[in-house]
Length: 135
Image (cartoon, rainbow, N blue to C red; front, side):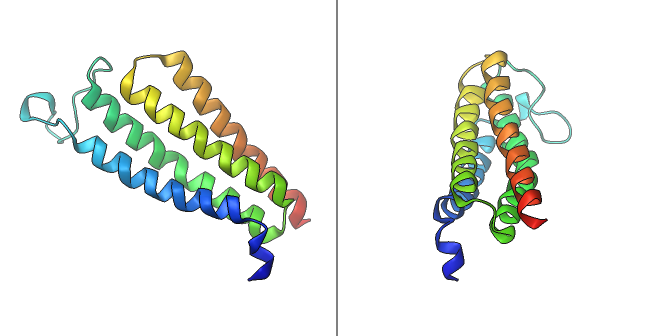
């Protein structure tokens, strides 16, 4: 287990990401009423509505979870450079927190895209560092 100590920031980022997903799950349920839901129970598509944006922020976070978790764990298990794995995992979480705040509180698409792009780049780099370390 000592070999994992050097990845403490990445490990903490994974745990924090789990808590963020749980928080976003709760936020996605807030404010739903029969009037603002479609037949499937989801909020009606309307980016002007914070209830819809909260639902989308949660769904977007869920969609990004798999690649982030896989790339981070691959980096740790392959023994990729701890500095980069820790940094990229931490930046990913910070970018996703910023994205959730922007997504829920505003309709600022360019800022949301910028936050997404930063988090996407972190996952790609994590995966590449893991591949290099594995070979």
